[in-house]
Length: 382
Image (cartoon, rainbow, N blue to C red; front, side):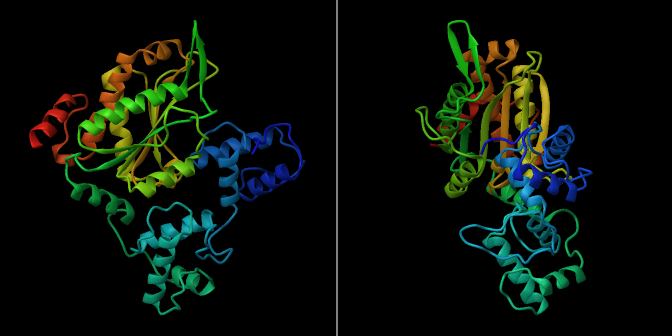
């Protein structure tokens, strides 16, 4: 859909205003116009939900707004196929069940089969009909019972334990590399002398280099797209592909752009909400990626951030998105168009992936792994 922005009017604007008034981010539902106050409220909402803060209501922001209107208990929840129920009430239910020790998977605000099974298990244990739906009786039982699990969030503990048990070797593990954009969507486009550099081509080159290095280290590697034009995939579609492949990790590669040439540096994003909820394993991967790139390349450190983008929220494995510099920055652009510099980034990503599988007590200092030794170690085993 076309983004709704300042100056627009109509039913959609009225709906946006109504939702934001209900969330207490806007004082009045009138006037029926996308004015400065509404744009400020949209930005505040985007910030609170870990979305890109631009003041525009595109597909992702509209989906988050539509989901945010629901409060747990305001409607019956059930597993619907093929269009699952989505909303903040679903996320609240998932969080409540996780705190009580039931495995809903990642609290992604989608009422899927795993959430329905967790609800049915809860219903069985409290003597209710085991239909996997959350109606008045189930809500009453949920409010009556307290938290059963202490010492950390169960889902993140499960993720961490699964990683610990998988062992430190990369051999046999599956990783999905997602070069952003593609097809008619070239991403950031910057003319540079006789050549025109664009984000889609550069991140595909990085993804191809990383594919070769990870394959040489023994991993099964899948790319979400090839170099030739194809229909652009949404974040949800890329997440679904990675889930279908049963990936152990997903790394999405992007470049950034800004109206100011002074904006530069690398930033890494992982799943997390504005209220402090974060995937422990995903956050660790983001920190490792960020630190390895900064130390090995000297790029400006724009730090790690929690976001609820579809690609991060809907994947069932630790997922990060890396924005590897600004093509609109002369300094970043000069480095990014250099193949040798892109090779440095690939080595940093490879080192981060290897460190991800080291137990905490066996981890090594940032920048100290000689990634060439990973291939030599694999050759020795073969």
